[in-house]
Image 1 (cartoon, rainbow, N blue to C red):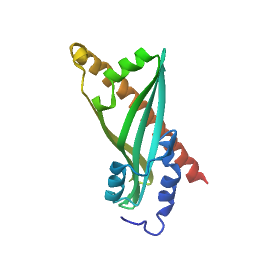
Image 2: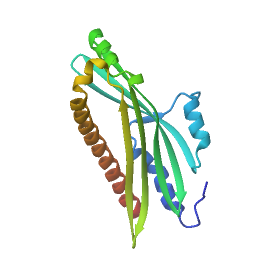
Image 3: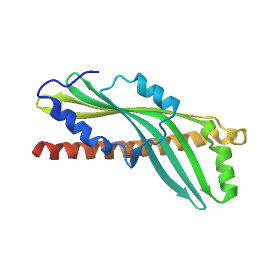
Image 4: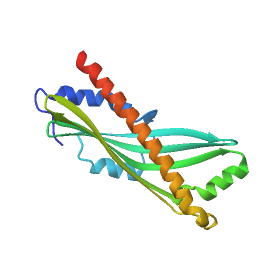
Length: 189
């Protein structure tokens, strides 16, 4: 765990104050007894570690779906510049609505069929006298396709990839844009 050098802590304070611009609608993670989370927390070499719960709701006619994601947030301080790292620790999908649709949803998209993995890094680098913010991420979703759907798996994969890619790109651009705007305001204070 590295500490800020004299005169460089202002940027670290900015990162601390603006983390939530990248993780919308998060709340502190309530489950303090999750062994996976505790193992991750203990193995971290970060300056600061936090665990967040992010819930995202979307729906279809007669079916509401909630995506609950547990993210590990780490603040590193390397080469005199801060970096956030967000790691997907756990996720689940739940459906509410018409019983036949909930049953079908659970058959096709149950938690034991989907294995996501994700890591996103937000860092900065100096370019001459300017500071440039950089976001890099990797998302992988492995899905065990039910035998009922095997015939349509390739088409579903292509559509799913495009939808997921568009969503992630949109959310990432919005978060980075908000972060850059906050930085410009912070510099002018």
